[in-house]
Amino acid sequence: MSTLFISLAEFLEKVESTRKRLEIVSITADFLMHLEPEEVEPAVSMVLGRAFPKWSQKTLEVNWKTLSGVLRRVVGVDLSVFREAFSSTGDIGDAVKAVFKKNYMKKQSVLLEKKLTINEVKRLLQVIAETGGSGSRGKKERLITALLNQASPIEAKYLVKIFLGEMRTGLSEGLMEQALAKALEAPLTLVQKATMAKGDIGEVAGIAKTKGKEGLREINFQVFRPVRLMLAQTAKTASDALADHGGKTAFEYKYDGARIQIHKWKDEIRIFSRRLKDVTKSLPEVVEATKDNFEADEGIMEGEIIAINENGQPIPFQHLMRRFKRIHEVRDMAKKIPVRLYLFDILLLNGENLIGLPYLDRRKILTENAGKILLTEQLITDKKEQAEKFLVEAIEKGHEGVMAKKLDSVYTPGTRGKRWFKIKPVLEPLDLVITAAEYGYGRRHGWLSDYSLAARDPSTGEFFNVGKTFKGLTDAEMIEMTQRLKELTLREEHNLVVVLPKVVVEVLYNEIQKSRKYKCGMALRFARISRIRDDKSAEEADTIDKVREIYEKQFAKKGKYKAN
Image (cartoon, rainbow, N blue to C red; front, side, top):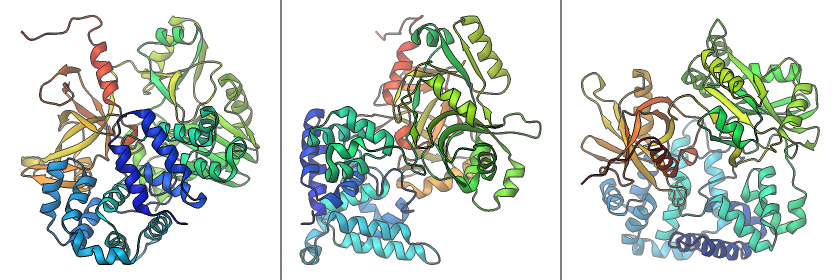
């Protein structure tokens, strides 16, 4: 029997009102056990705020501007009503639910005729994603209208959240893994290992529903299914990294580039970005280099690409991002902005999963199979002086800093730990999300050019503003940013435009100071944007905990000021 979509929505309401993590895990485990096998994967994806599995290249291509127009027509009210509801609730989903409630009785006879199911929502989302070509926007709007016309207020709330990728209920992927382990009565490590290999907890849950624990044990990496990346913590100095790694470690240049994952099966090559999106068409020279040099039939490798000038020197990250956006006339752009590839890890070779091997063994295998492709510059040492000299050399050559990798470290997809450190010789930049912007004056009149910057609370998904800036972007970048933010607009208040938290920027600052202006109690001093992080999603932005940690570290050698 098909599960109604309202069951999923009611489950999410329970989760949203629950603060105890163990209770969330228990509620989620019970929800999973009552789903039909074919419903598990789409349900888990939707619950986590995704229309499709994490590895899928499908996108809905529906922005808030389009969605708000549909909502206005479905409910029959002016957009100002939504803005007023959003102002009072602070959540776009709750605002939609409140407005739908006022008009629910008008639609109730229609709702009784046909109930939405999880599978029907999945089907409609797929149709919307596959709608393209001439007149596609109108077709998408009609499909969304049909979907929302069948929705009750609570269903509309979560449909909108799925469309916008703005779930924020407190149910993280980590808690979903715990819930699946509880439902299966299986070790959490088994679920985590399967998720690392598959790259998507929804698909893992679907396999678990049909094949149980044995099915999870059979899961391995699959070429052309991108693997979640292993992440690094920050170390202040090379000495700190050496101490944490037992006195000896491998240092590598940290390039000011974009991390990529290269998949090969015989003559077919695909390249995935940090966000696991297929960028193969944008990087033909990387495809050619892999074909010419990597002789094994099957492999998954990791590397970094940097943009270079005519002298082979690295140029700023923003130029590299132009390559990622280009899918037409790529060859011309490749001549204007050439890239250089450096490999640094290998995860799969001819069917053999390598992530459980020590870092040094993986590096050796990579060296043996990379051909003439460059590997990241490396120094293995237990000498502090050598490590510091290596860091200085990296900076002098135009790179960001260095990575420090524990010699026996295994590769742990999707996790951040002390096995890998990144070391930069400046006050650590923060990746923050733009939550609002103001129109500028004079030359900047008509441009959204003064940006509110926020850090993420990982437990609730809420974004806390920590500063503002109008510095750092070029005129061309501000014009492009204005267009992007207009499409994400939630409401306008005089000169201020409040937007969905989607755009990530790297921010430099002089220090973090105490502030009564912001809810979090902290503010960045002299903030300026150093680059736009199109390679990162809002979920990958730095957390408010990290901002607080940096704030506290500032007082290691000086006292805090306490007001009388």
